[in-house]
Image (cartoon, rainbow, N blue to C red; front, side):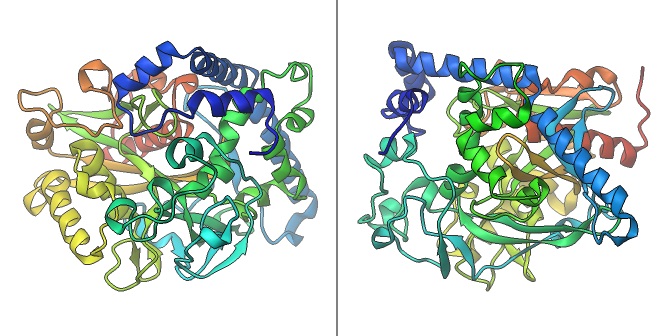
Length: 484
């Protein structure tokens, strides 16, 4: 397993007997009986609060952005592209958040959704999984076999695979046709290259490659708990500059040290899998009032347990095995509309068929489209539902991009038919808490109460951006004036 410092060792030991196949009750019982796990959770929560309170990421990236702006001002018209990223603020609040928002053309947010990301299905940047053992890998698609910069035997390996390497001798019915269970089966559209024009606006299309979810966790999401836990190091004090604090974050720092331009580290990805996430705010006409829906994630999801988020949200999944009748790809572009529709029926209605990639890809598309027609749009679009692109942001916790989306349901009948609080309630996916226990909450978009709906210290960062970008667009579309 290599050398682990005390915090990393605690992380491995504490979670080695626990994985996402356990029920929430089993997890709670395990945590209550295991001092190491309780210690770990307390450390992570303490680190999360410290990072937010001291504004480490915001300060670090504010300095980076300011240097880029200064460089473009000095260059004048000579510079071919300007920095198109800026720190995000919740409307009506002064504080920057550790989120970078990209400057995009939003002149046609409904129809441009499926024309912004182009995927090279024939090229995956990294080995089939990040433990770097080619003999145990099955090359599903051609690969250059580049190593990931961040590679660790995380608790996921110990819990699911009983060692550092995934099981490979599995029957297709048990582990999937590629021999890898769980997160080393699924591919996701991952950012390769994002460019800006001379005005700092994103040039579409954005270029992506298909990468494994496990490699995304190892090379990008691994930086989240590293940040929380290492912030508690004795030498990591408030008086230390953000640049010097990076030296305590070996995985994050390894990325910064390899580039001259940190902006390019985000937008021209090298050495890691930066999978695109999808975060959609659902706004529903409920008894004549348009309500923005906030969800609370359950404790048995893979990341951000118990955090507030939008619904639906997920990863930009795709199947790179075929470009014929492939619902994930449309004329070479990522079919974002299909992906978010799939997430909608999966999370709002616990539609299990949406949660995995079926071997018969054509049959899966028919199943999903029928469910979407029934549960989202209704017969002949009787629910008057529409889907819009609202923005592209970068989460500075994991340096991954997120596509922000608005799902706007105009007809009151949708809520009447599918109210999760009703006598015959909609059954939400396991990823969301029970509606009666805070899993779902409504906020009138015509009132300023929703300015406190997404408290940064309790929310997924991408959810904050998606929530308020969605509210802004819904108000614009519906010509809603905000009440003081």
